[in-house]
Image (cartoon, rainbow, N blue to C red; front, side):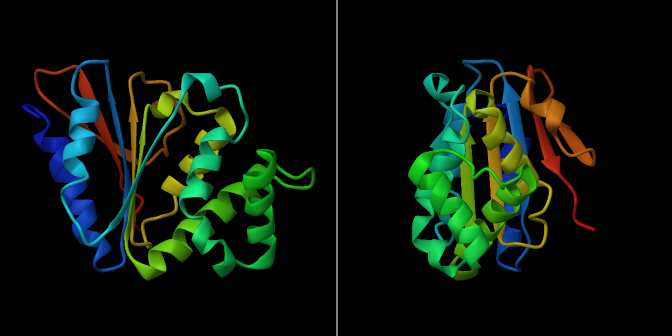
Length: 194
């Protein structure tokens, strides 16, 4: 955890803001062995008032469309009935088949994912962490980045951990980097807060 004060402080601030219905996303990027997973485990102990769900990308599933999003939908499946029928049906279909419906779009999948997380957060603020986000399949990563750009007014904290800069190429344009002096470790916090 030495040298991870900036990242830990940014997450702690975002978690505090969930109490007032605000949220945000944090992207932590660093090489293997620099303590990303240790940081993640520490973050999970910060606030027991939020519902924390920790998921991870897997190399074996990186080529399977929606495999990562399947994990997210599975984790919040009890909130599916609270969604409007079109979003519920779209995510239910993804959960059952691992595939998007032919008439579905990336926008519809992102909006349904945001709706699901919003429904879950209406009961209790959320902390959703994705370790090894660089291993997520592209459609899942795109859906989660769609969510990341839109959770400023939701009590949701999304934390994406990656060992490469691959995910940062798709970050929202209004991100502000947080540098950690003396480490090849970068955190970027989403500041789309209006």
